Image (cartoon, rainbow over all chains, first blue to last red; front, side, top):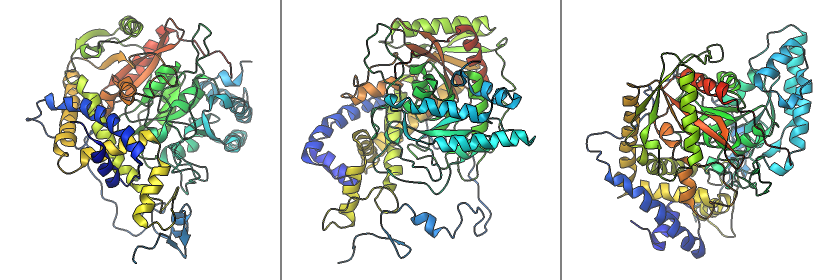
Amino acid sequence: MSVDQTTVAKIASLARIKMSEDELARMAPELSQILDWVEQLGEVDTSQVEPMTAVIPNTLRLRDDAIDADPLTGGDKRDAVLANAPAAEHGFFGVPKVIE
Amino acid sequence: MTELTELGVKAIRDGVAAGDFTALEVAEAHNAAVAAAGELNAFIVTTPDHALAAAEKVDSDRAAGKALGAMAGVPIGMKDLFATQGVQTTAASHILERFTPEYESTVSQNLWNAGAGMLGKLNLDQFAMGSSNETSYFGNVVSPWRHKDGGNADLAPGGSSGGSSAVVAARIAPAATGTDTGGSIRQPAAFTGICGIKPTYGRCSRWGVVAFASSLDQAGPMARSVEDCAIMLEAMAGFDPKDSTSLDLPVPEWEANLSADLRGKKVGIPREYRMEGTDPEILESWERGKEWLRDAGAEVVDISLPHTKYALPAYYIIAPAEASSNLARYDGVRYGLRELPDGAGLQDMYAATRAEGFGDEVKRRILIGTYVLSAGFYDAYYNQAQRVRTLIARDFEKAWAQCDVILAPTTPTAAFALGDKTDDPLAMYLNDVFAVPASLAGLPAMSVPAMLNGDGLPLGLQLIGKAFDEQGVLNAGLAIQQRAGFDAKPEKWW
């Protein structure tokens, strides 16, 4: 199924990527070509199989219920967390005003 | 004495330990090679001081009689997808330009703990999305290889680990880290005449590796011999509680258990990999590979992996779907680029930041991923692809009843010229047709150089093993290496 420019504009908006009309016009046939090609998966009879959830059988672990069990990923890291923020103020991430 | 830049991982480690040369001499020789190779554009940043500091520590440890690590004195290149504390980590993107991690990835830390040093951060396809290293924000990596007819068209070093393959082939680094999501270690290794192994999913921690498609991403070594790959993989791998998919298993002694004696082993030849349009010279290298493995004592058997042709389309649903989710974190708030047009609100800032910060191929994949995960299409695309993935893994399971390791080409063609496939995303994707099935099944797989084609360019052979059986893959790779006698290297022009 091919996607038109309007559909691509909708996806781009869902993905929060601003796109010009030119970009949308260029992207639409490229995405259509790729999506047409993946359509061939429809030929495969998958009625008897479950979707894969884990490629290698593994069980999820629980860590100890302790504060800062791993000092590397525990708390008290405010400055490190903010170090790469484009706008950090007063120990917080700065963002444009959200509430009018 | 041989030039230090000609030495591999094992030769450097053993030479430093024996006192034939110092780690500092090795680091200085490689730093000089890095500084002279600007034309390849293989590094995004160079870190000569890191390499020197690591070398000085190794030399002083040796002088003090301390035990040396498995990579002691070996300077390596680090793909710029691994977070390195205090050193810019970009994933070759504009959106992460100037991002300087406050922490070190587990894999890179493991390598430093083993005594390795860092020559620099290597260029790659942006967010590891690409097969030619042409999607980097920091420009294309140029392969050190050229057609033997003297034509000087710039060739692709493969991707996404194109900086890694270029520096190892060009004798600028004895080894480099790579990551493989759908062939990004094996395809560039094949294009540049070097070795590279992607281990079983979960062997190497993903902690601190910029995420692309989390169910597929695996780190691995790229080097000029099978032994060097075994040594480096041993240093990189290991259980990490900070990665929920990390395998809680001891790291096998791959180096110590290397053996090219394949008596009693069966090598499977998947008939579905003989695809229409495959280069006849690739098929010839495959035939030679069979002969070499027979010569090593293995029995060659025909096998079938019936769902092979569906692996690539399944991959191009699953990987973009995971990417669209993983890359949602780049919002201009916590790190990286922020674009804030005049009067823009929060949503406008997100959209402007991501428009400015992502390249075309990254946008393309985010859009495909968003589309296949969107309401109404999720079952038809994403779930169907995950079901096909189950069938692909099952194909391999059935094959293991008949063989111990699988031999196939790594790529359908030799390296192509930069610019050849940039206008046709689908043609670019098809280059990974032989690499992707093992990725979808989480299996260990390796590329080793086999021969040069008529144009004087390297061709690689791929070995795919059972889950957890990196040893079987490495051993078969060693048998090929010993018989192929591949010692070609690119002539220096840079």
